[in-house]
Structures are given as C-alpha cells and as structure tokens.
Image 1 (cartoon, rainbow, N blue to C red):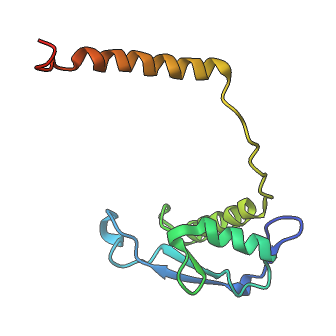
Image 2 (cartoon, rainbow, N blue to C red):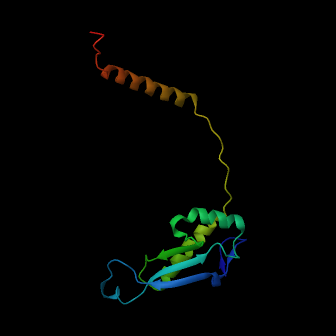
Image 3 (cartoon, helix red, strand yellow):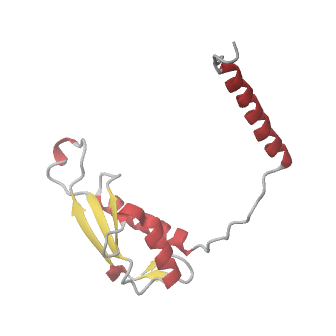
Length: 141
C-alpha cells in the first residue's frame, strides 16, 4: 500500500509499470537499456479514491488522462530504473494529494476606488492621444 494522505491509501496492484527506452543523448547504453518508466493508474475504476478526489484528479490531469480514464505518467529524469520508478510514483502521489485538498470557493472582490480612478485616467490619456492623431476632415478646413 502507498500512503497518500491519512484517509487515502493506494493499492499497489492498481498501478501498472512499463519500462521503456529513454530518448535523447545517453552514450552507448541508450539503445540497450530501458530505464524510463511509464506508470499507468486507472483513475475511473480505482477503489482507493473517494469520488470527489477522483473527479478533481480527472480534471487536473489534462492530456495525461486517456479517454478510458487511465492516468499515464512518464518518468525519464534519472539514469536508473529504480529512481525513475520512484519519481513516477512520487509524482502520482503528489497529484492525488493536490486533488484531495478541498476547493476553496472564490470570494468576490470589487476594484478599489484608486484602481478605478487609475483606469479612467489611462482611458482619458489614450482618448487624448487618439484625438490628436485624427486627421483634419475636409469640412473643417
């Protein structure tokens, strides 16, 4: 079990890891050793996540979420399999922790009178500049 928060524990059987080859420079090892990790976590069918956390995780995952609801995290920062594997798991745990935080409602605010006055002053200044730039029409001459 992976400890995420006090109330959320992830079952390791829900994670699928696949080792793939890293891209980029790497010397002679690059074409022989699969050190990058592709971690797959089925968010939609997970029994470990509460519904509201699941929904927020799906929304925050963006492109990393497939159409079937599987979250894919690729880790290729390090040169060893084990460190990449741990990095992928850490990133998954961090994403779930962020999704587990309650959403604070937005508090409505109003612009201050000073900011309103600054905005109007900028508009007056811009208006003057445009008025000066206007060409002289034929009826005025």
